[in-house]
Amino acid sequence: MALLHINFFSKSLSKITEFYMFLPNDLQPMMVEGNPHHERPTKTLYLLHGFSGNAADWMTGSQAQEMAVKYNLAIVMPQGDNSFYLDAKGTGRAYGTFVGEELVAYVSRTFGLSDAREDLYIGGLSMGGFGAIHTGLKYSETFGHIFALSSALIIHNIKGRKPDVFDGIADYDYYASTFGDLEQLEQSENNPEYLIKQHKEQGREIPPIFMACGTEDFLLNENHLFRDFLTKEQVDVTYQESPGIHDWKFWNEYLEPAIAWMLG
Image 1 (spheres, rainbow, N blue to C red):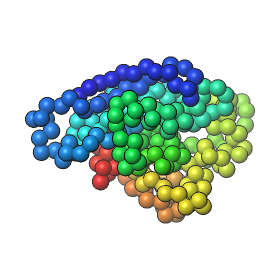
Image 2: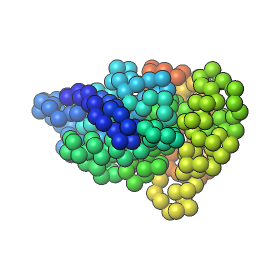
Image 3: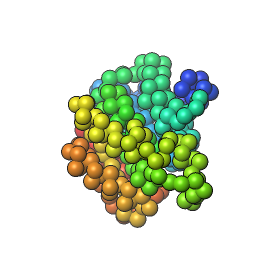
Image 4: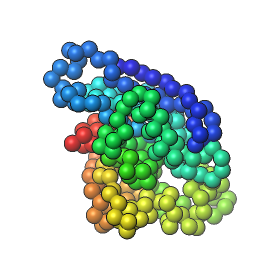
């Protein structure tokens, strides 16, 4: 198993950024004998970290390395800062473009990995769960499947928010600079629900989505609302929940089921 730490210049971010990557290209035959996943070319999963996290979170907090070996997955873990993986206004803040276009192209080209839709997946937790859903939908011709754990689906919470409001996590200026005009948020492409409706109007294929959330998670209601929206819109969604809070214990419980679901 190769562990890579890559620093490279991103045009989308106008700076040197980083990502970690597990690449199962050096496994001994005895480790993969009889494993059908190693009888096909390596597929790639992009894993997005949460708010206040960094590129190393999945590497240090989860069983991502074991999943890379077991399922013959190149797992790419980029630095997303606190961007919600959106294209914010201003130079160097196009995190959606970075993950959905630039990073995918860089990784596929540099490591000779497939860029076919059926070989590319995206997933994440909390803010990264939102990012996986939004990026996977915006770049639905790039990613074949999406999974999202304890997703920070906060669009309806922050819409129309006024200045001088702090909710314990962030203030108005942060939300406005990240999501754009909060008065128009629900009708903007930063809203995953808007993207779903847009896809349906245009007859574009929507990737299947896997969601999971703990029954004691503070984001449970937001996940229920989005699940119900997807069901109403007849989007292919698989939703699971079980006792758990917003922590690595829950996310590790669902990482492998999400990967197994993606791979069919």
